[in-house]
Image 1: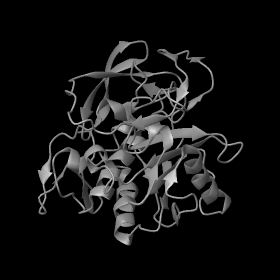
Image 2: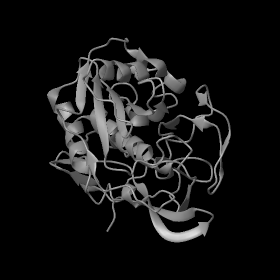
Image 3: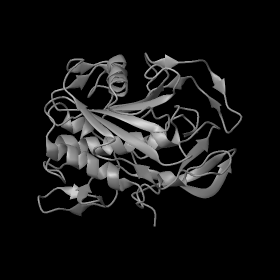
Image 4: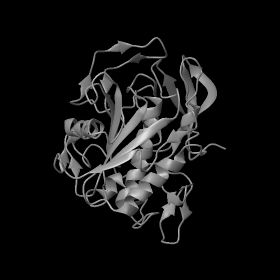
Length: 313
């Protein structure tokens, strides 16, 4: 997620890594809303491996929980197509360049089945979700047998356009989405979860990528869902490279990989509806942020140069 929010959700004590840098208190990481002016894109960033786990023992499965009754079948298809086809692409190959202390890389494979790995619910916790309620949404899906317990999975609560969140200062206010891990969702298991909101009616100018670049249309003709896809890409990339936040891959300020290139999109194609895209994944076009590609240039203890790219060559 984006720049660690040093706010109400601080967990555990200061831990010192045997790798590149001393890890600060474990924090939820957020995608900050676009602030109206893009930061200059640096030619080179650096990322440091802090010695913690990444999800590399096999493909990460991404589970989706569609929260709310306003979801349409087309909206679910936009999400499911992205997740089902992302693994194996040159886009996800960016994430697959990251490795652990043994040199074992994240596999360029990701799992998502639109039937087995997705579920939906109405509004059992209302329409303004706290972080505790978001975790409970995941716990409910597991307890009811809708989704399995998977310590190497990522459970994403995606909300319809009528739902907001008060978590971490508030959706549209301080965050467009976030990821974290929890030991209470399924006791005895370290569960990775994320929240991704629908900004279409609430704050498209802050959390929807097409609006950020100045478009009034989007690749799949849904400003809320197309905006959520870029946030989803941000969160899943950080979850696979730093599943227990601040323990694995971060920059020197403990921002994660999605933060380095947030709200940067690279070369764009103009689509028939006048919108712009930078990726074609599965059967659909998408506009998603760039991600830092790890280079072979080492610049410090367990620290390497990176550059923001759309995909590997």
